[in-house]
Image (cartoon, rainbow, N blue to C red; front, side, top):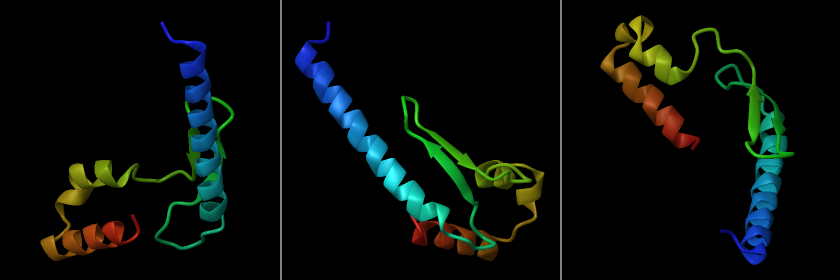
Length: 89
């Protein structure tokens, strides 16, 4: 059973995470580039935190690469894509 102290600590940690996500969301919302998925909004009112992005026609990059569309991508292109993703993480 959780004590009232641990519940206060958990609540404080949740507020900190919410503020951090909100702050990052505001920055990401201003980013515009044809190779970036546009962030439309973030909901941090309660757990779980929701991140709303624009629709990606082919789904997630992971799904795209694991299915038929990704099979035609050459190794050099795959490496370039991985490097670009890693660069901005």
